[in-house]
Image 1: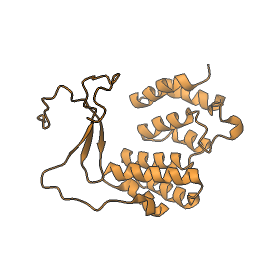
Image 2: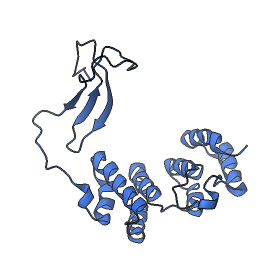
Image 3: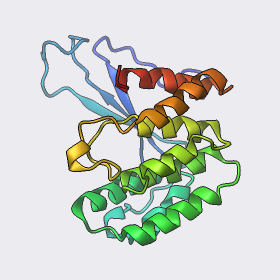
Image 4: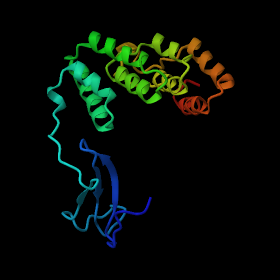
Length: 213
């Protein structure tokens, strides 16, 4: 499309584009004469722009913190990705705080994953939410390496090779060890030579740096 927000200001440094709950686009303008930000010449000159469609109407300020676990799960289907991400953040926060009804949430998310048909985005939303709520064990991730959806296979690789200690399929004793054992390693090697998906091969290549020599 055409440029819709031209600037004639040499101090303009627009970046960090974010989407708001009302569908607006927020842009942070560093707005300083040192473009790289190494020197702050004007400490109070930064600005934030909001870009909205014409004739848009204001919305009531959302408060996801007061929603139930189930309502946050339902927001994984929201057409506005702001609600999806913020709801997932709340689910993650409640998991870390130990206040999440994990069993019910995982049941709902697994149902969402299974009922998504052929929609990769809906499957991934459910998968990501399961991951941040400690709902994916190693054996489940290994099973997903054979899923029909190439993006699900790719993210199963990503999660299996993540060495972070915050997830439930790692214990405190093995937090610093790879979760990829010889059997899984062999599966990944087989996928590297046989999986036709360039998406899967890309994730396998990216995972190499996190695998033991």
